[in-house]
Image (tube, rainbow, N blue to C red):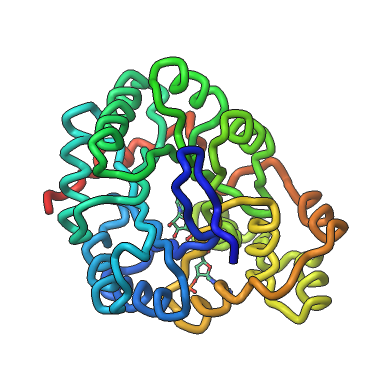
Length: 295
Ligand code: NDP
């Protein structure tokens, strides 16, 4: 496993454990189980309501805190310079750590971009003060990035976006690469394509895709392993979520095979251009009513 290097020289493993929708009561065990099989990166968020349990899992694993890359996100209701500095305090207290490896803004707020910029400036202060080792953004489209870059000093290290074979966002990947920003894939095994939601039965899950199944069969691997390997060979950071110990282990077991260029091209060709998750330019009303509790 070769680490990825961020634009400020900080390194992180290519696979991390995601914990979105991991119930708090299952999160500590999932984190502990991941750290025991070799994961050294956990991706959480203030809005997931399980930072405390991520910290518990970290401590019960016995793995040294300094060996684990801890990433969390500031929720939109905590945007603003002072509020975001305080959001750092809330998250680190819940996690039980003094510093974070990566702190990112969870979403742009297009209608109040000044507030997004103020939040990012707080991240810059936290970085300068040595409280976080890297800073970044999530769900930023190229036009959000351009605006942020024009109004701030530190180029984000990471942009975490929806990215799986059915929605690969080539335009975002190109914009990220042009600025030296690492693209980090959320729903890297297509979780968003099979989570229950308002889509009904019409929606196709990438987990059931015939091309992925063919390639999986050829390698004697699972569809999830093929999608993760695809992301890694493209040089992305991937953060699959599972609370199931055997799937947690399966998702990490992707470092002893290679996809051929032709197989990667077949997966690239599956992109539909249709996102599964929310459009960053049309944030849901509910986003602005969710408050992040104090630690
Ligand atoms: P994923 O693509 O990681 O898929 C997760 C789903 O796949 C779960 O239902 C999980 O169930 C199942 N699963 C996991 N491993 C396997 C496997 N090997 N075979 C079959 N099924 C499997 O989707 P997520 O949406 O969770 O995205 C990953 C992470 O990205 C999140 O947890 C979060 O950290 C981050 N994220 C960030 C967002 C943002 O706005 N910045 C938005 C969404 C996600 P089970 O647990 O039962 O194994």
